[in-house]
Length: 252
Image (cartoon, rainbow, N blue to C red; front, side, top):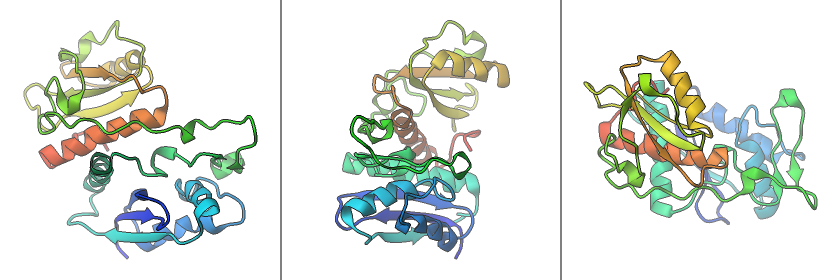
């Protein structure tokens, strides 16, 4: 099979379990999920979603269903990744829910395995243990001004006034999302990102990018956990793809 995108669901659970993409073989990538049928929870490699699907199988049984698609020019990595982001963003918008296993999440009552090289095998939580990735995810954005990626209210967020990257000093150390673009060529954006510390992250961009580019950021109150920030970032990248038919220039 060719490169493409795929989705996984469990018939006894509402919604989708996972949305993914591959630049290699769809058959091979889906085969990498077979670890969810192992006796012990698999590692996060070769497939990051396998531990989460393993936990779903423990609670709901083995009957996962998959479907695939091969859009035009799906072999182009930047396009394929942008479509994946758009699919997840639209799923969040239309369902009001998050997929089960994207963003490193896992169902309540379980902890995820590590990568194989770190040797930690996950499984059920014992009494007193906690797992941040079982927390409810961030809800979908409002999609206000969704077709205007440089709008001050894009996607319902309260964006700051744009400033040159050269001025990226004295910024808040709080979590948030940000966008970077060229005033002379605002579409597509240059980059969309998230960070638990906007000051540090935008300072890195100031050092590594053209200081004449401009940036704008929005604080997010539910950005205390990385997967929540990533869900909001995905909404932004997905909306950008739908508005501009392109990912930000330096996104992937």
